[in-house]
Length: 234
Image (cartoon, rainbow, N blue to C red; front, side, top):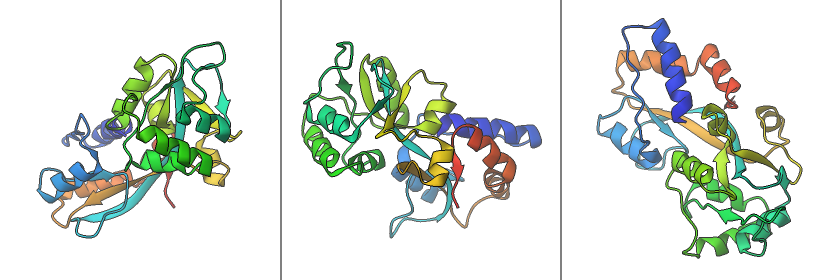
C-alpha cells in the first residue's frame, strides 16, 4: 500500500504543513511493522491481518481491495478456475498465441496464497504442487511481486487491484470464472477474493500521529482510497 499511503501523506501535509509523514520504504511486512511499532520505531503500522495473541497494539479495520490474478503479456482477459489449476499444476504452459506461461509465486503462509487456493479445490491442489517446485520465482512482498510480474513477459501471479491502480501498472488484471474485480463487485459480494488491511497503534501513540490516524479513517481519506480501488472496511 506504499503508493496509496504516500498519496494520503501528501494530502494530509497540505492540511498540516508542519507535519511530515514518513512512509517506510522498502516495506518491512506485517510482522516487521508490528515489531517496529512495539519497539517504538513507528507511530502507526499497517497490517495485512489482525493481531495475533501476544502481539502488542490495537488493530483497527481500515481498507479492503480485490485480490487479483495479473499478467504481463498473457493473451487473455480472464481465466476459469480450471485454467488456473492447469497453469499452477504445469499442465497449461503456453498462452493463446504461444507465449510461455511464467508463474510467480508468493510464500506458503502469505494471505495471497491462501486466497488463491480458496478459488476451488482443484486450484488448492495445483498451488500446493507449485509450492513444492524450486524453479518458480517467489516474490517476498507486494511491491516485489509487482516488479517481478512486470519484468517477466508472460507472467501470472497474485496482486491487489488497489496496488495495480495506485502504481499505474501496465499489468493486465484478469477475471476469474467471469467475475471481474472491482470495488463495486467487492462491495456487492459479486467478487469474493480480497485483501484486508488494519491500522495498528499502541497506547504510547503521539498526538500528531493520533491526528493522522484520524485522518486516515476520515471521509476525505476514504474517498481518495476508493478512487484507487480500496473500499472502507465496514
